[in-house]
Image 1 (cartoon, rainbow, N blue to C red):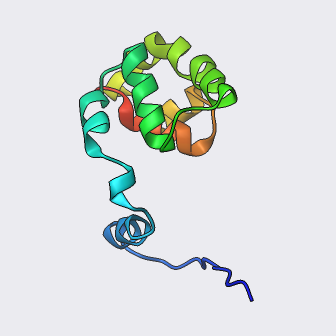
Image 2 (tube, rainbow, N blue to C red; image 1 turned 60 degrees about the vertical axis):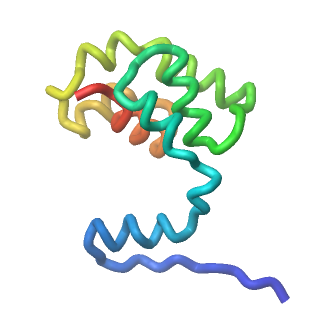
Length: 111
């Protein structure tokens, strides 16, 4: 018999949410160094390294193309928005690329 997991909606504090999801990932598979070295550093190489780190492996051709079109090609726009834009404004401006990738992109932009 196969065991399946069902996640149910529950109101929790942000630290409880983070702790729950942190427990689901092996931190050894996500070394912090590539993230720490690239966060807030909007260059092609840093962005590619960040998204590979987030992906947990080398990017497929399809994902690499999406990152190129939705993020790397728009570095100037992200820099222009900077910290003055609210998360809502930022995510509306960057409407393509998937919710998780866009939130990750938002967190990657410099203050």
